[in-house]
Amino acid sequence: MEEKLQEIITELQNLRKEIKTEDKLMTAGEVAKEFKLGKATVTAIFKDERLPVQRYTKPQKVLRSELLKYFSMPHQF
Image (cartoon, rainbow, N blue to C red):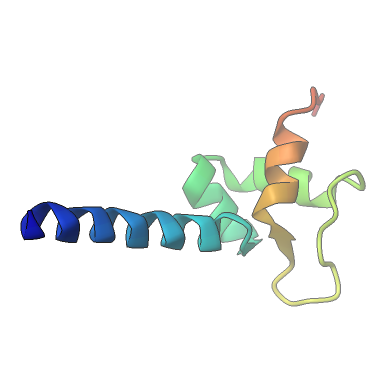
């Protein structure tokens, strides 16, 4: 019983970590690595005005949630 309880606690902690990191700020390098995209593609994505990128920071960053919204829309490059 105690072992099962510990397993449930561990699963909940892992889920909490996933929820916290879901909406993190990501650099172009992190986007390329996570979504397995080329550098040129990520550069084009970050230049698109429809994506709310923090252009005042170096390196530029974007919220993961905004990036997922952007990917859900059709685009032409």
